[in-house]
Length: 135
Image 1 (tube, rainbow, N blue to C red):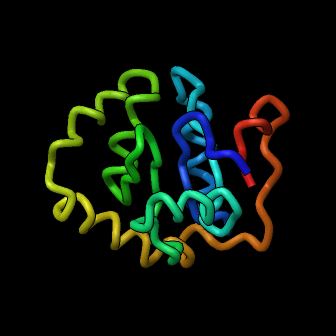
Image 2: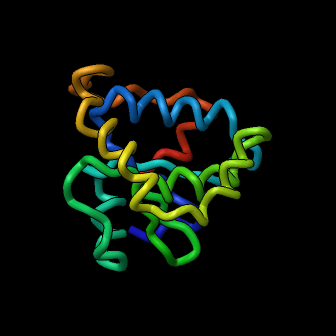
């Protein structure tokens, strides 16, 4: 399998919050460059060979772009540059220290299954977005 050409968002494919977040991104995208893949899938496994910092656990969202893998809150902030205003303004906050931003991120990650649920299978994306979802 060839490495994805554009930026890839890796997410927990069974997490209700993650699923809703991906759907939200699709509705608010500006450039339609982002691709998506579950952390449990082949694409994530392939990207881990080049980026060993990508966790095997499922509590993190990851953005792989421009040869770098960004985790947790930094992944969201860097991905925000692909969104329409006002959401893309979050990219300006990428300079804030990750350890501070990740405090809130880790709290949400701990409770996400209890609040937003868990799916046994991923929903099929809309036909216009299917090509952007990687295995």
